[in-house]
Length: 344
Image (cartoon, rainbow, N blue to C red):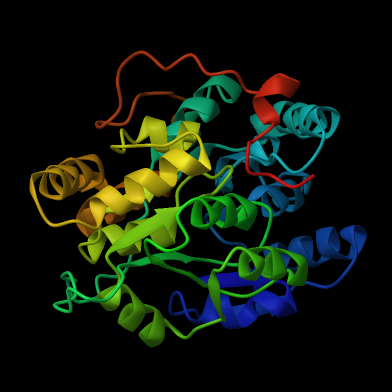
């Protein structure tokens, strides 16, 4: 496997999979298109897997790459974003429509992405390739110190997609009931918003310290405003934590339990799930059931192998998905884009 990535992402790419080679992606759209074409000419690969909306654009706009060779994973379509205007999201949607015919296979990374792809790529093959986190974290258990406050933790970069402002409002609605921690760094304004609400922000942490933090936590709190799937949520769930999550269409499609629509409801849910007892146990059982597809690396490998196999023009539901695609609005109206915890 060979990868093409911006210089700032090379370290991340190297840490995810063994690679035969890596090519830096230069700055500038024209330069990037040329770089992708140059690498294709040099390697002549059987498959080109474009991961992400930008990669999908650079690969599919390159006519030198045959459609039958392209596998596309949007990893959250750009028109799902909630930090840009409806007009811009519509532009992203129209771009995806225009480029839809330039991928033999869509390897969707979530159920919602699978359903959206089915509406955009009606004549092409669509395969749900579930994300399975590395199973390196030891199962967690509730701390034995009954006098200490439970730890409610979120993990991820401080950016609009993760919506730390929603987490800040969640913590502010119950500041004395838990130790609210955000593990991650990024935007300084968002960090200040969290700290003003009494949240401890750790800054970026290495994986081993994230694992240690999860072992001390009582609940994982997820506040992303949009997404396809969340590696941190899956990691926390696989480590044995209950998950108090904000409602999104992607998580609803996963049938995650106890989704909350407001910061106040999210805080109440998180605090209930810190208490040992039948509710926490039942929540964990429903969570494990909802995420069972994301626990099987063999299924992931099988689906990816299928995505890389010889192209046959076919759209078929993945085995875990219903025959009838859910009816979902692709571009919501303006009222649906306003989240109660967002700072504009």
